[in-house]
Image: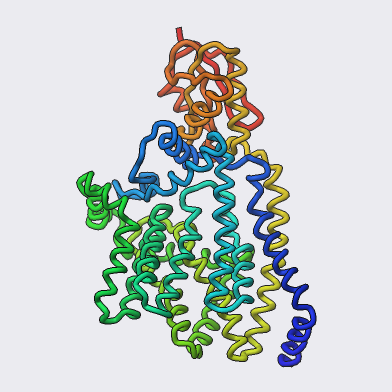
Length: 513
């Protein structure tokens, strides 16, 4: 029966080869572009705490010509490890849309889209080089429908661009398994470390897994380890220079974190480890467009069983060891995060999502080559199902999000609030004080510096004097919390009026005599 299905599939493929290739190409373009380009089309991206901070940094580089060696602090300063920073490359990349779009944050969505599409394109190239053209197309398809990767392309945020660089590290790691050239060793290490510019939580397990893998590949060729170390040193060089200039504050922060776990927590605490394990499980489910947790777990079990079964029977030793490297990333990442005393977020595990996609494609390749027809048919059925889910999700999400105004979270609502204040002031001097649940008011600081200054040629002061406005973003979880701010921080000034805008912002006008 399975042979008949297989032969019928081959017959259909051989007689409609060009049509099938064109169809696959068009589907990938649709699934790559349609859900990823919503913010590019409606010019209404989320612009919150992180985005405001990042655009202020880009503005500082472009306008004030201030070069920097660091990016954001880990966890925006709340990760528990003080003085340790991501790399600065994301800020420098952000200067490109800052310049091209005259500071408009909506321009940053083009950068994210470019990274997303480039990653899919390189995913195809990687699959073609490792396996063949068909598997390259399959990897591009799986990447195009992956919910995690779609979100990266839509959301302007520093942890979102590293996919391309993770794939580059994978590519040179694969080449290293084929040929132990010094250049391959150096570039595999460089790109693994380079990811720290976007997300340190990915760079550390990625670099550690590569180091362990290199020990197996290079064995006693000690001179080649020099290129591995040089790759890491160059990738982390901004952090190294910053550490030397500032008395190794990041290293001290790590030591303090490791030696002072806290009164109510310990490393390898079962509560944390259980939470981390759940994060890993959800990451696998969210890598593919599977909307049901139980189905996702069933897929995971089947995935692992088939992967180990087919990999053990793989006759290409060099390919086999590379697939094992992709598996090595899972325990290595879990080991690294076992020292972490907070939640493991999905964006910490992008490298695992890409590993799952490549291994999934390998299963198709191996089951075909090893003539495991039952596995091959089952995998094809799964691909068809998740592709259908991917198309449905792309259409639904795109239709809803395109028209979503976004309230206080998105750019249009924020700019409308800024316009309201300027128009109400009627050209007279005024100040603005903002309240945000995140405490820091980076997005509003930036909007007045960019949009207010560009449109109205005036940047309001931030003092309680003369006429001043309060721009209040209510906390959805604690909608009353801003009242404490009014009573303790603001206190003074005669209230002229209080108005709630359609976006949900509260604007209060006061006069201080």
